[in-house]
Length: 460
Image (tube, rainbow, N blue to C red; front, side):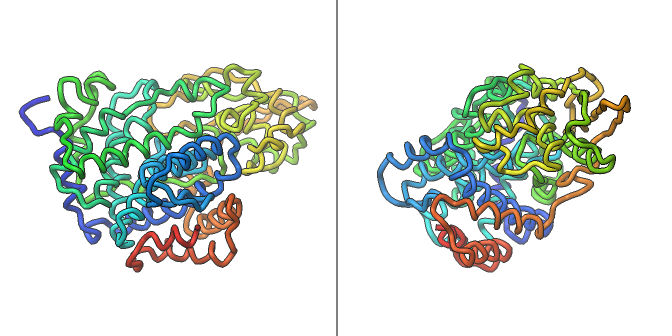
């Protein structure tokens, strides 16, 4: 670090000083879409991810004041633990928003914001939008401008800071307090990609709970006057030096800060699986449909995989027949098998029963990864290329481009509203259709609400 102030001051200034009106309309709209999308995914996870129930129940057993709602359950617990519980569910289905380059900002932003808003009370819809858009911007500025080696999990290590910023905004902290919140978050910024590389673990889907809790606690502590290190990003043993060997682009992180809000580039998923699998899903389903191929016609499917994609094929036999929903969502062979057998990939394909689908598993056994350095992950998510060898001797190939939900085929409000309706129908505590409609309309018009947490009450 030079004599320049730590970048935490710049991010704190943005967080404390940005008015709703300063945020471009596109970024405000994207923030609302992410709120609707994330809340729906949280509610759906309350029943669709079996492993989440014991962890959420543990959070509810913590006792204390009933400050905030555990979505799907309808139970009120302290804001810190509600943020943890809702965060646990926010990524469980791997159906939440993501950056074009990969990684997920909103799962560590929206659970803390709503938990603290419920506890504090009186947070307007405009303030909720601003807090969300600010956190999304900080996340993307960090994620896009560090020298990543596919070791640290960028969603968790960056999310602790962006989530802390959004949480601090909801609490109305000062610039100095927000700097402290960043410093405190730095003590909790953690998580490596081993949870993705390995199989047999439930934590792959639950990690956002740890980040949401860290963000909430950081803001709460700073709000009570606890001072964190003020050079957490650029200090001698700061975030950039320790996690990324000092390789980061400070100028790019600060370019347009306060006037350009990068969250408007966020994308929404068409299918509930790792974003790296989507291009392969699209290529497979499209080839099957366009060529009139039946699953039994397939002899072999060769998938050309770069560095990160290859990890989603190994160990091969475990990826072909995953035992846990979290592993299935992170398996290229399995998701290709589902796409070939069903023509699409749905939430039901990752339930206990869905994982036993014989047609999907039969095709997955025919998937063979072929290393391809041209598909290495160095910027945007790499495109998936497949070759489908048929029993009749034909070999057909396709690249999965113009993937639904990605930049050249984005999902808008109509899709997100339908997705929300379906997701909310899976609530552990059943929701009336009129309550679901009321909630989605509130988010659509969030800037008009005097109390943003009216949305949570509609879902409770």
